[in-house]
Image (cartoon, rainbow, N blue to C red; front, top):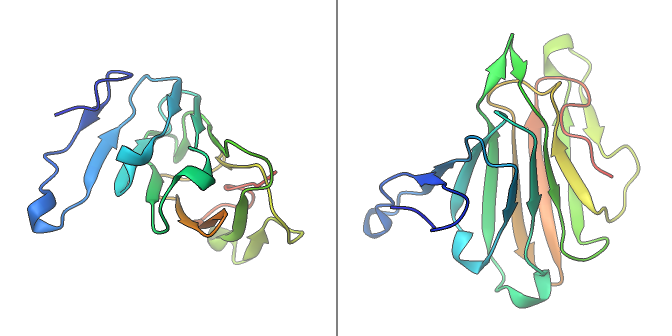
Length: 153
């Protein structure tokens, strides 16, 4: 079963059993998300991927997606995934990074609404970011074992 765009492969999507849909983005280089992507987990990191979130104003509260770094070379992601809001300053939240060296830090360093978050090539396999629409913004939180693995801008 697929979404019909970008050649994405999906899991079996057992919605009646409460299981999430898993999408391996593979070699796709761009992805424009829609309301129908809510509840989806995207496996990323094989190639540079530009993801555009739908406008927060057009979504119901609770719309949620998750991105997990899956495709790694030498322990870190092969390519960067950049997730950008449809509007400006729609992303609010943080990621905790730097667990491998015992130097935990918050990203972004300065609080405030941001336009994008990345799963950077310095991120490790299994690092993740989750995005949930609440009110007029997207709440973003995530975790990376590597310093600056999930930068915001």
